Amino acid sequence: MTGIEFLASFLRTGRLHGIGIGSTLAEVDRAFRHRFVDVVDEAGKSLRRDYGFVEFYFNPGDEWVMSGCSVELHRLASGPDMAEGWARTMGVEFPRYVAWEAVREELARVPGAPELTVADQGGFLEYRAAAAHVSVIVVDDEEEERGYHAGHGDVWSVSLWAPVQAVSSGSG
Figure 1 (tube, rainbow, N blue to C red):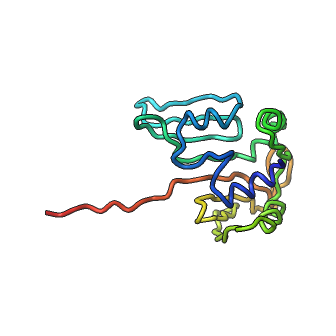
Figure 2 (tube, rainbow, N blue to C red):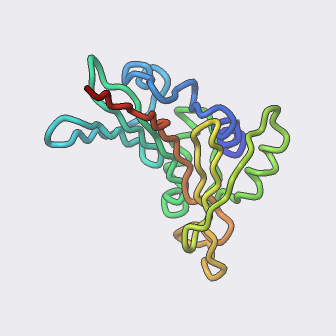
């Protein structure tokens, strides 16, 4: 599978290799067979699992439960070995740079493509697929050129967030 196809699927479903919000750490371990580093905060209230350019975030409970993730594609520009390792272990081949236009074209071919809203983030554009809880950050600075970092029109990152639920407070 190409990285472009992978990202289009992620935008449509909000899942990476079957993993999404609410998945347990054990489920992530079964789905992702790649080297990682775990970082637990001092209070033990959060865990970040870093696979190089893919990161998962977990909250504690009876077990660690996924609360979000991000695919930091900008890291591939300066570390092509990350993409090579990911292709070997996960079967997804990412290019050094990921053009947003290529992702949009692939997304247009995918049944059930999500509606995207866009917001200016000062030098970046954020495209949100609200139904899947996924956002894409795209470099929007005309002067940014490809090199050791992503250039104009390239995807900087793709993130999955947990939906916020309103909490009502009782009175009485």
